[in-house]
Every structure is written in C-alpha cells, then in structure tokens.
Amino acid sequence: MPHHAIPSAPQGDDDSKHKIPAPPSGMAINKHTQLAKRVIKGGASVAGAGIQVAQIATSTSSLTVVAAAVAGGFAATGVGLVVAGGVLTIASSISSGRAAYKTKQHLNGLGEIMAKRADYIFKCASADASDSQNARQISHDVISKSVLPYIISKKTAKLYRKGASAIPGVGLLETIRAVGKKGYKYASGSLGVQRERAAAHLARHLHECNCSLVEDIIAELYSVEEMQWLKYHTTHAVAVEFLMTKLKST
Image 1 (cartoon, rainbow, N blue to C red):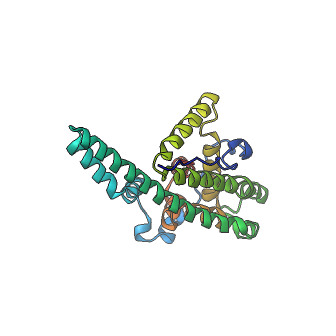
Image 2: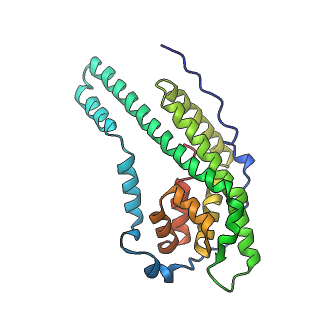
Image 3: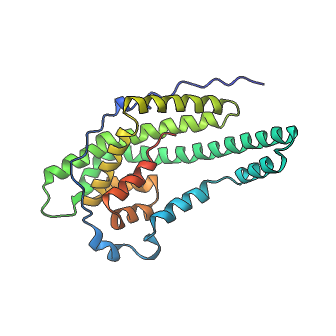
C-alpha cells in the first residue's frame, strides 16, 4: 500500500495572521426590511430552517446511506465489519472529494472578488442618508482588507483538509490533527473569535449599507437568493449565526 504523507497545512490557516478588529458595540439595525417586498419576489424569501435542511440534503452522499445499510445489515459478522468499514471509508473519501471541489469553486469566485476589491468602494452607499460617510468607509475597509483575506485563508485551509481527507488512510491522520488544533484553540480561548468577528462585520455591513462587495462575498458563500434573504429578512444576530457556519476551515 503506498504511503501518503500529509503536506504542511497552508500558511494562511493561522488566525494570528488575520487580526480582525472587534465590531462596533451594540446591535446593528437592518435598514432594508421596509424594502423587502419591493425587492424580493416569491421564492427568494425562504425560511432559515429551509436553508439548513436543503444544505444537509444536497451535501449527503448516497454512498453514506449505502454504508449505513451495510453496517446495519452485516455488523454481526467479521466479514460484515470489514465490508462496512470499507464502504464507509469510500463514502467518506468521495464526500471529502466533493467538498474539496466545491471549496475550490468558492475560492475561484472569492479570488475574482479579491482581484477587483478596490473598485467596490464606488459601489457602496449607506442605506440611511443620516449615516456618516466616515463610518461607512471604515466598515467597508474592514471587509475589504481584513475579512475577505480571512475568508480566503479559511477556504484555502478547508481545500487542503478536504483534499487530504479524500485520500483513504490519510483522512484519519488529518482528523486527529484538526481535533488537536481545535482543542488547543479552545483551551487558549481563541476558538471561533475571529470567525465570529468576521461574520459580525459582514452582517452589519450587509444590513446597514448597499454594498456590492459584501453582497458578492455572501452570494459566493451561499447563493444570491440566500444573500437577499439574509439582507432583507433577518436580524443581525440571525445573519451572524448563518455566516459563521460558512467561515469554518473544516
């Protein structure tokens, strides 16, 4: 059996290199809710639970179901355990491979946004005429210079990890490494801090400004329809929770 070595994790997968400032205190206000009926038509207004269910349904490999059936039907025999284990390994590898492909597509889209991010400042306006231009500029700069590079670093790390997990035998080692790193972050109190800050900045800018940059970033992470739902039909807290799920590197 050939030996597969896990390559070094990408250098971008280090939160210390992406220090995102804490968002302004106080709950952001969605200043677009009154425009919802005028902007969103029919199916674009979806329930949060519906989005989660759809994601789970579309991301579940049919081989996972087969693996469960094999494990249940033959678990009583030694041969059954070997077969079940093999099917589970194959299913896991295929699932990781699919995830790696999707992550690569997201990275391509985010890279295109990154390449033209300087032009987005001309496509950013406050949703409230009373807001100061300086506050909007600061918020936009945080998204452009800190949050977007952070998201790209997380997607790059995820691509590496899913690619490694797609190799039978190597995936287990990668899982052990990832669990160890998560444990270290938890112990140090840094687990999820940068991710929550990034999500909070995205949600605040989405709700308080008409900005093509933040809209394009979120549409790339989810979809145009789901971005519009988050923009017009959610509170700040709900948007933050949804966006955090897309900023994981695992």
